[in-house]
Length: 281
Length: 252
Image (cartoon, rainbow over all chains, first blue to last red; front, side, top):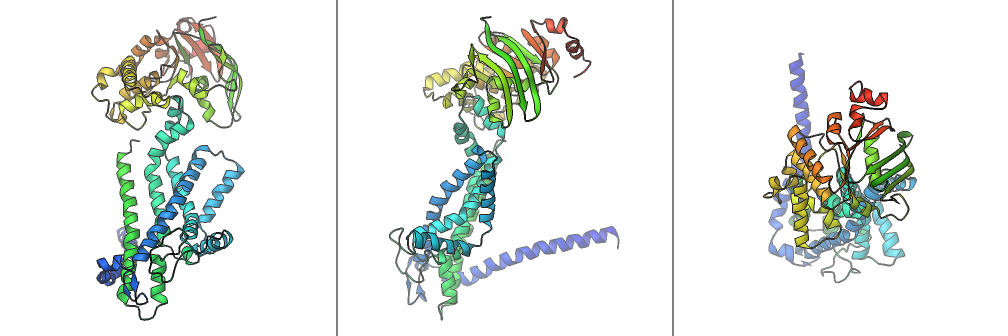
């Protein structure tokens, strides 16, 4: 075989591999859209489930997922971004900060069902929050923290050191430099990390399984101590636990979850692109 | 000597095991240009950064000796470092405009200091840009991004940014190293104007520039102060062989 043939074969092989990566994504989205689109109606999005969930809408699950994601954001964003600012801007390289970093890396690798069990033990039982939105949001927050911290720290470190030096040389305190120069410059990276973290939280089933999710609760939650339905868990339940569930409702629910998560992803991408173009260094 | 603005005594400095400065003793007079020159790695930048304590941001360093500004030890515990840096401004080797407009760059320091009075800020903006010989070029572009200016304009913007704080001392670290001869000339002209009111310490980017701007000159070699003379005599009648070797181009 001559070199050109080898080269062409190589490219063909690599192209095929790339295509294989795309196929499942296209199939997943395609099948869910085709089979679920029929279920989507104003009623499906705004009504309570009826007849043992085999009819009616999925409003409580949508609201539940939005509430849980919001609760996670309230806890995880300040803690995650604050921690990242500390690690990137203030912490010196000591055994303690190295231990913290190691912990963050390891937390990112913990299976989500372990977070669920941890949340059950700590928030539901020990702190007696009960099976509640509070316990679920806190559990999801802990799972999301390592993603947010890592992304935010990386974004902060990408801001040139010179800006900090210039700010200090003009009589700025360290915090003034961070607040006025470093944070605004790191903002797109931070927001991307935050959204990717929250997106993962919104789609997870295992951490909410023991801490908040209700099997069938045709009411909207009233307080942080209420249980709630949530899209991922609802999907799991109607797909495996309820006999005679119409396929259309299953795929419709999956479609709503997918659109919710993908639109967050899209927003993250748009924000990142917008700020990249505006960046001046 | 009561005209001495800065008095450096027995200053030694090291980064970890690397010695950067060794027992420097040097007086820097007020309202004049003092040039610190010598080959790369001689400790010029380190010396500048010690005068406004910018090296506080670097970990793992060791310092001995003292630096006095108006007779006060600037490394004495209890010194307000941000206040010191307002009194001692710094311009870096590369033009480093902050993200934002021409206006926001110049007014960054005053904003940090908490000045809100619009009339005063406008006055500061015009005065600083005029002192840096930039006002005429940017007066219609005050709200353009600073990064849209040319390299020479950006460097004069950085000088204006330091001047906006009305410092007493201006430290310049090779301020013309990235500039063309015309921009360099403009920067040097503004230095001659500025020395009437300010104490200027400059690390020049060439011996020629050192000789052009110096009222006093100090030659640093490998962290040691080899020679320090008033006026331009260092360049015409050096006292030490090593100084002569350097300015006649035998090394460096």
